[in-house]
Every structure is written in structure tokens, then in C-alpha cells.
Image (cartoon, rainbow over all chains, first blue to last red; front, side):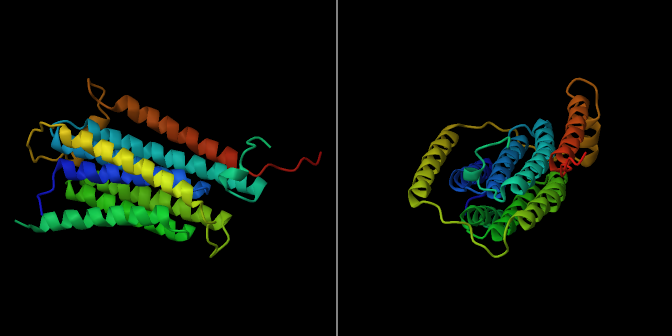
Length: 104
Length: 172
């Protein structure tokens, strides 16, 4: 086995990103699509941390970007789930095919 | 030479990717949430492996303790227990798999052709460094984004309450 370095972490991050894309393209349930988005955001965070550690170890910009992305992801998930629950209340379904009419 | 650190890295990578794949492939929505939980724990382990302990702690507190619990609660509120998701069309799956395979191959080709010239220091930032930088108003400080994030969280909180509020039936 090779000593893991920057390229290994970039491989994991890219694989996780495309797993999330696959889930986003194939799923039709809003909650599972939200879960795919969380996977994508996590792969981005991993990328920021890896570059911060291996390319610019004396700076902390990647670290702060990761912190802010985590905060924004939490806010995004909360708002998305509020919308999903409201949609379920009016349509009795959280399938994207049934959510064509947004207002009524 | 195989060290314990190397083995740990490959185990964490396998946990993250395996649970990620299972999370998007399973047809039980509750199992998908649990696989997502383990994938996020694997990423927190990778942060520990990279010696960014503070980020790992934030990852566990916010994602594992917050977002996944929120997702599980919303599954309970909207989904019939034990019901499988409807089967997807197989051509949609095939085309999605083809698209992500091509995108992944292209990305990794670009990454391996590029030479990153990194500096080699093993000093990881401590929590004291992070705190000083986050509240610093000097050049390169992060006080302004910190304040903007706090405003955004407040706005999201108010927005969630307004959206999820049950509208009262108009009797008068």
C-alpha cells in the first residue's frame, strides 16, 4: 500500500461528489435528494481541508471556508425540511413529480 | 511499509465511500439515512486523521447530531413505516451511472496530471489560532463573515418557523 497523501484524499472527495450526483439524478424523493446534497457538500469540505493541509499549511483559509460551509449547510437543511413538511401537508406526498405546482 | 496510520486511512476511506454508495442505492429511506450517518462519521474520522480535530468535532456536532437527526425526524413525519421507495426506471439509472463515471474519470485525469507543490509542515492550527483569526478585524481576519453567518442563521431560523407554521383556518 502507498502512503496516503493529497491525491488519495482528492480521489475520495471526487468519488463522494459523484456518488452524490448519482443520487441526485436517480432519486425522486425530496428527502433522499437532500441527503445527496449533503454528500456533495461534505466532499467539498474534504477538498478544502485537504488543500489547506497539504498545499498551504501555514494559512487557515480552507479551514474557515469549511466552517462557514457547515453553518450554511445546517441552515439550508433546516429550511429545506420545513418546505418539505409544508409540501407534504398540502400534497400528501414528497415526490418531485407531484410537486409541479409550487403555489397552490 | 505499512503503518497503522495508513491502514486507518484506508479503513476510513472504505467506510465513507461504501456507506455513501449504499446511501444512494438502497430503497429503504430510513436505511439510507443511517448509511448517510455512517458516511458522515467516516468523513469526521478523516478530519481526525488529518489532525484537524476542531473541524472533526464540528462535523460530528452539526452533521451527525443535527442534520441527520433532522432528516430522520422528517422521514418519520412524511413516510409510511417500512414502505419501500418505488423502483426507478433502469435507463435513468444507466444514464446517470454513465454520466458520473465519465465525469469522475475526467476529473481524476485532470487531478493526476496536475503537480501540486506543497510546503511540508506538520503544524496543525490549534483552537486558539482559529478563535483569534475568526474574531480578528485585521487584514485577513474573519470577523465580517462570522457576523454575516450569524445573521444568516437568524434569518433561516425565522424563515423555518414562518414556513412550517400551520396556517390558521379563517373563521372570522
